[in-house]
Image (cartoon, rainbow, N blue to C red):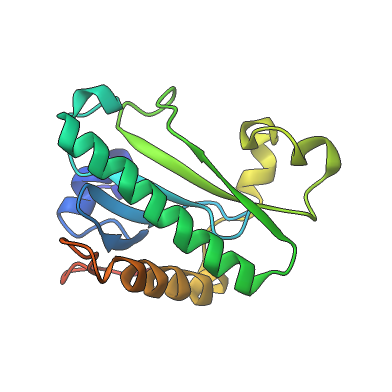
Length: 169
């Protein structure tokens, strides 16, 4: 079986990406492979040919940004409930490493080291991220994020859903 990490979007489309939280109108809400900032999520475009936001037609771009906002609102609500030191949410659409359209949604906390708290998450050393891989300990956070995304999107024209063939972790 192919490793889902080599093609995250197509594996999500096939129901084989275990990080998927919900299917949104423009793509997939996923929990990050690393959780050194608990609640870190991403939005993966459902268009595997899109390399940047400008590759999408305007309506799909706006849907992508709205879905990014929805995930951010869910991350904010859930992380504030899970940790009183929750501070804010940072959003980024970079595309410098992976040639697929995706957005990062990072919760930020007051307990972060002072030199890193005020800068972008990219200033963290790579070994910090690798030190907290996604695993069973994150299942309650994952479940809460999924529930909140579904709740927030309930009134949308195209509400979020959990894919029928969702593999889970």
